[in-house]
Length: 202
Image 1: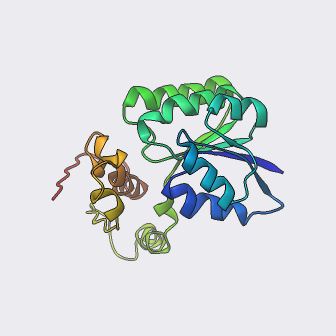
Image 2: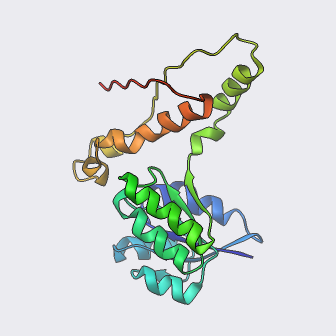
């Protein structure tokens, strides 16, 4: 049985990770949740019947020894949590953006090599059927030679934009720093040898 721990009990954990992981009975067991907000932690642990709930990440790692740690916390915390998890023997899946600085990203990659653990960044829109269809069209050359692309990303983020206290506003680039990575990784999945990049935001 693959042992998974989740750090951060906010929206993405509640709406995506926990329901999906609960559906993988017999393959995955959720060995622990971690969040600094103990009220939210208790509510989420109760909702998903997770016995082990921790405000202390180090304690979760030492007591539960997860195979995988899923990090769903604000991006500025990703590097420290990921490196600690890998040092303790866990693989890591981190929400995008990977981190807020290049040195932090590099340190996470270095830790992956040093400790022999895998680290992945959740780029979920790569698996969107519309995107997969578009990529197949381009790779088959049935629509001609691919010269460039524009990405228009329509997403519902009212829960961020209408809440001035949401952590996304503290990111470099604000809310765009939270949603923008989707456009970047989708573009990279299509393109090779990028020569020029232009970005406009309204």
